[in-house]
Image 1 (cartoon, rainbow, N blue to C red):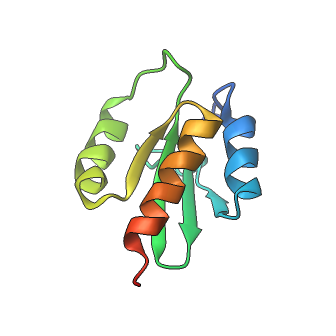
Image 2 (image 1 turned 180 degrees about the vertical axis):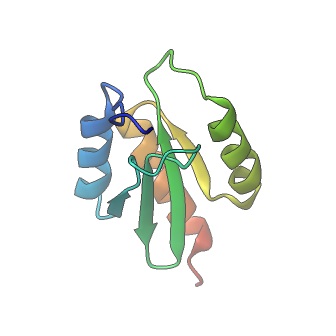
Length: 98
């Protein structure tokens, strides 16, 4: 039986900041089983975002997802809106072709 998805206290602030920076945000919070909270996209850039409070810890399923996608630059642990946007913008500039 699946219970209602819990949202971290900073979820709305991070989502709002990422959207305001021009990224598209897909909410995956109801997927469960370690799937990250959001899929953030821009042309040529898909990134899974796991949102945690400053002291929040990853669960086992989340750790497995991180291990699979972080080496590809497709996973980010978001704790702060400004840092998240800065990281996404950096990733976007490194993936765009000149």
